[in-house]
Each structure stands twice: as structure tokens, then as C-alpha cells.
Length: 127
Image (cartoon, rainbow, N blue to C red; front, top):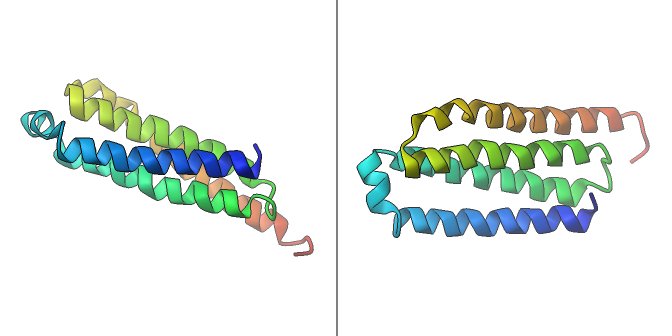
């Protein structure tokens, strides 16, 4: 994955977080209220934003810490699985989607661990 590609993914996820958040606040508000899932939907948007920023940081630092490609992959999968499953759960009210969400959470945590590992691994090398 090139630096440019990672930054483009961060931009796309950021755009989608704003767009999905706006739809949740306006177009889908009645559905979310009827399902009692506004907080769940907001959590999905928050985590998408947080990890979009993590992907942006990875894109900026990828040339210094080459191992960050793994973190990028985990963050990307985590956003899709964690936030995606919560979006679907919130809008469909099919509670079994809640069983998928922890897999996304594990991917997000693996992304952070991969980031730490990449930095620690780089410690012995010249800056």
C-alpha cells in the first residue's frame, strides 16, 4: 500500500463518516429513534472518525515506519466490521449484528498493537 493510497482511504473514510453521521441525524433519525439505536449509531460514527484519524497518521508516517501497513489493514478492516455492523444493527434492528461487532473491535485493537510494534521495531534503526 502506498502512502498516497492510504491517505486516499483516510479521506474516503472521513467523508463517509461525515455523510453517514449527517444521514443519521436527519434522514435516518426516525428509524434510529424507533429502533432505540441513536447511541449505537453515534458510537459507530465516533469510532469511524477516531480510526480514520489513525489511518491518516499511518499514511503520514508510513515512509518512516514501514511496518505500519499492517496497522492500516487492521484499522481498515476494523472500521468496516465494527462501524459497519453497528450501522446495520442500528438501521435494521437485527440484533445478531451485535455478535459481529466485537470482531471489528479486535481488528481495531490489533491495529493499535501493530502500530506500537512497528514503532518499537524501528527503535534500533537510524531515524
